[in-house]
Image (tube, rainbow, N blue to C red):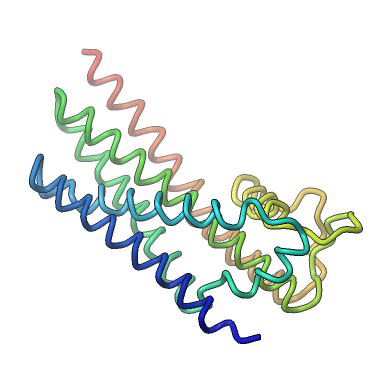
Amino acid sequence: MSTRPVHRRVLFRLAVSALVGIAAGVVVQALWRAEAAGVAGWIVTAAVYCLWTWAIIGRLDGAATRAHATEEDPGRGYGDVILLFAALASLVGVGVLLAAGSQTGPSSIVETGLGLLCVASSWFLVHVVFTIRYAQLYYENGGGVDFNQSEDPDFRDFAYLSFTLGMTYQVSDTDITDRTIRHTVLRHTLLSYLLGAVVLASTVNLVASIASNSGH
């Protein structure tokens, strides 16, 4: 069965998410300030894509996941572009927090919130993309991850793998037995380390600094 129409639906979802994000950015620019428009647009884009995607894949059982896995992945090139944007957006979010730390009043509070949401939405987006990637690789290659169960893994099982790697940089009770998946895990954990050790740590320190400054 050809996956081209399904890939078009995935790309349509990406396009709609981006258009909604652009619309949100335009509204923010008109009602508040242009500097926040891009950040707000990215937050909305990432949130719409993650929620829309999970609404589709989160309810599928193992058999449906097997049939749907290779159809849900937009392709390696598109997926890597999403991951690149997510990483860059996280750094932008830290920049917004830095700018917020030099201000006082309601503007500082709003920009702090935007910075936090930018980092959080990027973090979730990265692991949703890898959830889909692991499912696609698993069913395309006939396995490669030992989930210690007899039934076919569903997208929630792959989300467990993805978010575990994203939070701990290692697998827990799932053994990786395929070289391609192992290489993907390496890329995933390196990106997760950037987001976790650099971006999130900087975010926590900046928020603490902003809270301390606002208390004086």
